[in-house]
Length: 410
Length: 105
Length: 108
Image 1 (cartoon, rainbow over the protein chains, first blue to last red):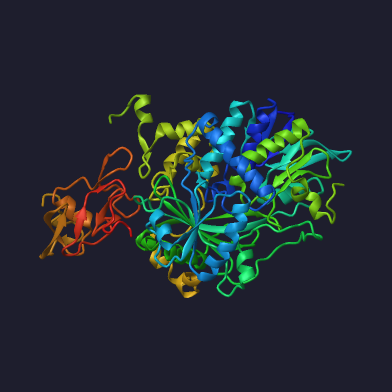
Image 2 (spheres, rainbow over the protein chains, first blue to last red; image 1 turned 120 degrees about the horizontal axis):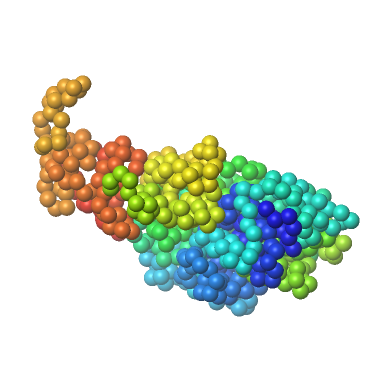
């Protein structure tokens, strides 16, 4: 194992591996530490959506757009494995008039952001996707939305980083981080100590534990998502379909709000406390149906805060099955072969924590929840920050200072 | 195949019968850094098929042991997750229908 | 009927009498009601049960106990049915499965 590095990245998920690649383009001395295997956590358990459709104004939209551009180039020129990258467009389907009417309002605001979003009626939606239920009253459709295989994409970034000289150590756990004079000096692992002045905390749902090693509170919490996969079937769906999180008895305002997942943190102090989901099980579920290149169909999901318990439960898997069948009736006779749970790194305002912290050299890039859509641009921004001093875009929105009771660093 | 087959013929042996993954593909994945059953599975699809690794997992574990030197006890399989046998989605959905999964919005 | 065990050292004589007709790739064959589909097929001399998706290799029974899924065929329009643990029913329509198979009504 190397004994010193220009940058040590903690976490072998999509953010860490993308960072490793972009950093390795600038220096040979990059080390990535992963305690299990590359992409073995959220990056290996998600639905592989790189969508423009749902993006929120600010950091989210800018990073997703840049990432879409970068993915195009990476797939054609850099990656040495097929990551099953397909631009099929994405659909969000609606079952009620409430959702559809709220969607009309959201349509205009998204189009004003320059997002090429369309609102389709039932027949147009079913023309694009014949397997959709007749019960659907309408759908959002964005032709720019793409899907990929998240596990393979994470590996592709890792391999590309290694080709540029990055050293990746799996099965390697970080035990402590040494800090002297409020600045990082080394990382201690189960395989040895690595001297470094720059550490990137890309540990996703474990970012808070890494933060504790340097005495910082990093409020990223594990939001448990359950999913299952079916046997392989001949072509049924062309693209990922998702539902909304809008409850039956919502007001119109709540329904419109239900299309957003970030909230403005500029007003007042943000809570850093342990979260809990409010409402019923049905309230805390959201439909995803993803066709894969291999022919398996992945379905999800429900949301829970239960620490790091990875078990899947009958009740939740059953709810996911009911939601999936509602949207795609033909799924009813298809066999489910495996389930799993993944931890989506969650922050209270829905915006990741990216950038420098109170400890010099300790950089955070965690809490994404939508990391597949951000990873390339995040890797690029981290390299620009470390080597050129270029600030992370929308620093006020993303910096950890927003949790410290003021919006200014230090 | 006769005993004492050449090394390159061994490489073409199919280890994961469901996904038709050869010994060579698995060994390449290990050479490229996969050192656990889980990462070999993610990289090659061995264990993702209809039988979910029931047939190939012990074989992949042995290949990993031979190539990495790790003892079999360390090569723990990915955790078992329900369903333990394939189940029709409609049957699985019964409880979901009861709690209103069909009428969420 | 060459492969059928007519006199088993522990189970004794095979006393089953009535066979039912099932269809395999359009051809009628006979099997005992309730025995595994794979048993009826192999007893009739049919060895290849499916062809794999990627290489198109022929597969038969392997574990013969419902675990390995090598023996899956399309039964009454539904693919991926494990024939070593699925009982014969009179009038069943069984097809050699090519790759992922085809659903009776296109799973729709």
